[in-house]
Image 1 (cartoon, one colour):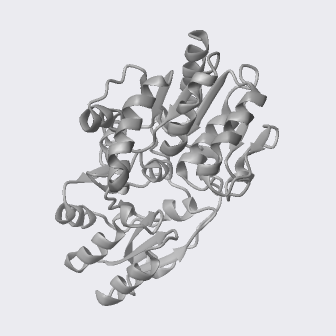
Image 2 (cartoon, one colour):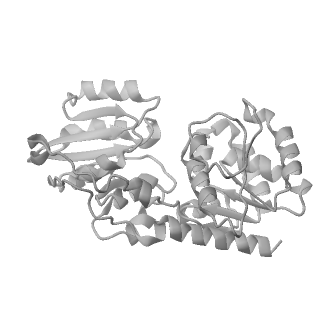
Image 3 (tube, rainbow, N blue to C red):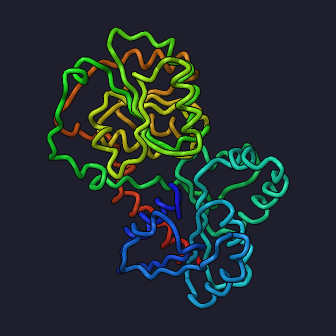
Length: 355
């Protein structure tokens, strides 16, 4: 377990009503940085496999032993193999979660594209329900694969307000440089997907009457390349890459604006977290379900740019706005944990009732 999809699944399982549902976790490997996030009261099973391709026989035996009423899987490759086993469990309902548009999966694995298209078309119709965090993902099945999707529903990613705002009563110290400068912030894996390289290349054209600084929280394979780009464009005094943080949200709320120059996304959680921290965002139009968030967010808090020139023009509108405490949340209630848990439980109940 290592990424956003797994984190969302953990949050959903931790939060559902234990009086109505009895969740259990089954993972391919016993390793993973997110394991500690699982509520210790939830039974945990591991297939103890180093490679996913070797786990299918063990997965079959584990499901036979657990005898679940409902199986919920996430990540496309896992969804495929779970649905392959569907015929062996006629009394069990199967839900799969698709967190990214199908065209992204196809672009990531061009050599396997014919197989992946066939798997989507033949296997996903076996699911009792397919859940996705944004409508744009569901629409992608029709647009890219010409698939019908009568059993597909939108379930937003739940935002844990208590965790994000855990430093709410803390007072921030503001130096003079912070008071005079615009502070932009981003968070995400240092990967081509996030488009940090494209924005770095464009930033020499940024025209601001203030000093400015951009902090990018995260780690990944692009670190060295991004550092070289920062040096090449003489931006080392303006951009910092501090790495990972267990509590980045205290830095979010102290910033003036969140930047998301992504090339693709599903439903961008960090935009929701920026709203929960009370700061506006600028994002590319290719950032997945960003338009769906913008449609329900307070006006001016999610700004979608059609290209990098417009992205820079939006950045130029931001002014220094230092704060000493957490800003007021701007997150629509639609994305709050309690509302998402309620919709998830309704989906589970419908699937169970139709068994």
